[in-house]
Amino acid sequence: MVTCKTIIGQISDYLEGNVSAEMRETIERHLRGCRRCSAVYDSTRKMLVIMGDETIFEVPEGYGNRLHSFVDSLVAKAKSSTS
Amino acid sequence: MMSEQTNATSHSLETANLIQRFLAGEQSVFHDLIRPYEQMYYRLAFSILRNEQDAEDAVQQAIVTLFTRLDQLKEPERFKQWSIRVVQNEARLLWRRRRQGQYESIDDREENGNEISFRGPRDFADWRDLPSETVEKREIHAALLKALESIPASYREILLLRDVEQLNVAETMEILGISEATVKTRLHRARLRLREALAPTLGIPQPSFWERWKGMNPWSPARR
Image (cartoon, rainbow over all chains, first blue to last red; front, side, top):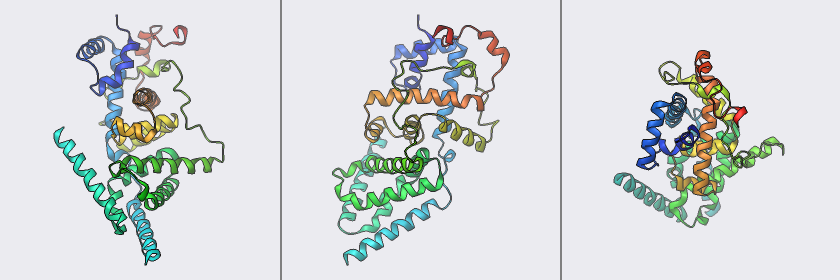
């Protein structure tokens, strides 16, 4: 009989669709009957959705401008050293 | 799938073309070369340094390295992975300097453990009704940052590369210099750890619910 530990160990692969059809069926059957594992699965899935949302990790205002000004200074320096 | 591959191919051709022009003396194309990745550079540096100014400094330092050593890149199609690794190295260097030798080990302290640890009732936190509708995005962001800070650096890095930046396994292997099996194991453990770290903030533990499961936790200390 498949244990909770086995199911939890497969959660990442299952979320990514990297399990065999047989394992997928086993996991889904277990999740239907196990509130604990299904809570772990649901919350992990939700967490991944949140993390994939780019706006969650915003870069500071002006970062792009500062970075490209810096690149401009490198380009100018390179040009002056070759000319 | 097909169009994804086509996009990836045309993107690496574009990158190869930009690198060629850069090396031929048209240095201003460097702007276009880094543009697709610059936000990723910042987020990666920030995940290591956890300080906005330091993260920007590390990215700038990495930019100098990329700019001056681009001629040493043998395979232009690997610019993405190579540049990310350079940013990561600069961020780690700065981090070490900031901590003056008393830094938390970047190397995985937990990876050799046999068990993925599950600790107590937090694992039961049921988030099904959470969070997007009920919790403000700002709060989620704060909670996520706090949770990310609480887990080992190696976990933070792999979560950032795979789950935030959505890099594939091959790219992640190359950037971190680890095997495919390690990418998978580390990512799995990192996800469970982060989920666990987030649970107290976002989860709603219901005492009656725990009570029902008392003594039935296969990971409870008594049976570990």
